[in-house]
Image 1 (cartoon, rainbow, N blue to C red):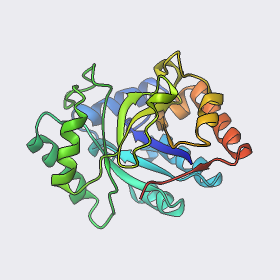
Image 2: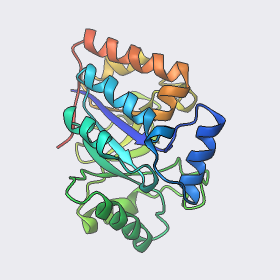
Image 3: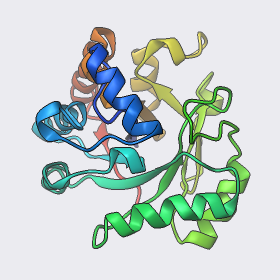
Length: 236
């Protein structure tokens, strides 16, 4: 079995400085151009390059405000990663379809593998964000949209929470320690159970750059997985 890398690309310009936080928020909620020299998607670029260097494949989920540019698309292709849609406004099927259609139109010719839901389900994260997390609805919308929905937003609290269903993984393990459950919070636990089960791992590029713990913990997991001969896998 192995590890499934889920990357939610949330912040257009990252969050390491005040300028990055402001430009990210402007692009998320209002309008701000995608300017590479200002660092548009630079955190995602750094994470993809690290994954490519270490032979790690993952699914990178983008919002409409973090749409991948040519350089990011090239890096993703180089690493044989999958591209997904990170849904923000899930207030209704129409709202979801409107967002998805804009995403598909702007990425015309690019294969989109699946979608995920933005947010934890509790907090409204922005002007366009609909907070509630409703996975049963998304499963229905998956059928109607022809886009897979197989990675949920719940957090692993025990080995019993790790799915054996290849069609849907409701839980995941966070690299960011603030979102881990106390009852399942060690990388050693992940490695142990990944020998017999598939475990989704979630990371955000902005945190990979701005948070030293997230950066070192992800690299530690990569090293531990390599030592234990555990692969990073894509779900086809």
